[in-house]
Amino acid sequence: MGIWILLGIIVLIILYVITTYNSLVRLKQYIQNAWSDIEVQLKRRYNLIPALVDTIKGYKNYEQETLQKVIEARNSFSNATSLEDKIKTSNSLNKSLGGIFALAEAYPDLKANTNFINLQNELKNTEDIISNARRYFNASVREYNTKVQSFPSNLIAQKFGFKELPYFELEENEKDEVSKMPKINL
Image 1 (spheres, rainbow, N blue to C red):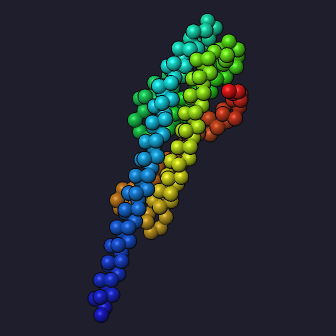
Image 2: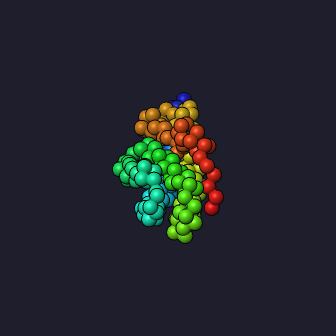
Image 3: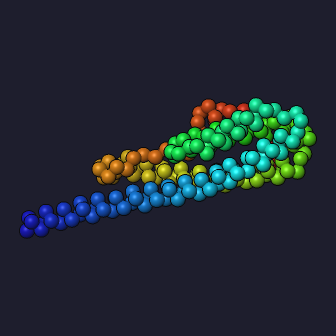
């Protein structure tokens, strides 16, 4: 009788390990899918930037330094390989684009340019989509990280190499910059 109880306990433990492992894999797949959605939109934004820069360069009094920051941020994003680097460079690009839109406030002719307005609207729509995708990504990361940290699933996560993943958030200094940015009227 004792052997059957021991076998039953072993089977339950094995089932728990399999179930927990599979749920960690499933959550990781959700995160990868969510990141893929974000990357599509980040690439869309990346591809809109050259047209925006060209539109601004058409004005004789544009600020070269502001455009240079956007171009550098765009190039940094294209060179990022890890998830952490992509998040960091995306946040840097957001900050640079804020400078472009603030620049438009200083140049009424630019602000009235149809191409600029269309590109600004496209970027705004893209940013909205990125924001929604970021919320889903962060919710997936939160669920995954909770499972990786919670006992006893953390034992299985450690055994099979599941590690916490970063959230896609603004850095503290960028949160301050965003709150100081002028509001853009579209």
